[in-house]
Length: 113
Length: 109
Image 1 (spheres, rainbow over the protein chains, first blue to last red):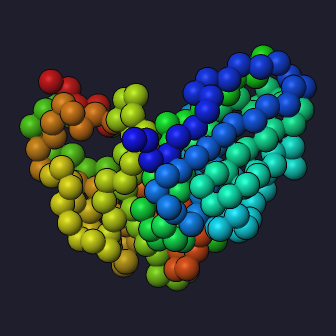
Image 2 (image 1 turned 90 degrees about the horizontal axis):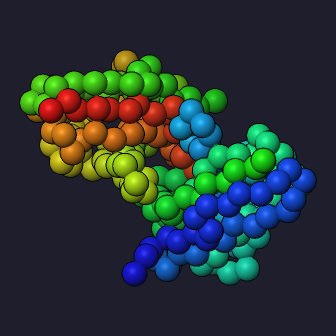
């Protein structure tokens, strides 16, 4: 009965490819997020969606495009993958704004070769 | 602009010893401060938040507005405390968390 799930768990792909990571939450939360964790374990917000509406886009290249088909899903599509995109991507959700507890998914380890 | 600083990337203590993970922040308004933890092979999860003023797994953290700090403390470290700890800040009405760079705590048996 996973609260926040992500697929796939691992993704290995070549430079220049386009890939998507899916995220789903069954907590009934209004807000969903995408974070990037680099090789040094630094965790940085990428996007925040509230009720399917983009709230935050933190200086992320426009090769990254989040898509929220409904409140329970926030997918991340990445075009023209680059070596520097290799990282662990975490999806999270919360009941409201950032002051609420965020529930994280297990992460997707993306490796670009 | 908000900023969260965790000066120690790595911290090792012996089992039973006190542990303190440091966190300093910079924010012009009234922040909400949190500690998140990531155990090995587990997802990131909330450990505690300053507003609830509670002790979780023996850990406490006090918000010191004068020193702009939110250090995490435990009097007697246990092996199961070994994990990655992140201090995080949320501004009033803000929609996101700003994380520090994290501290990897290792408790030596």
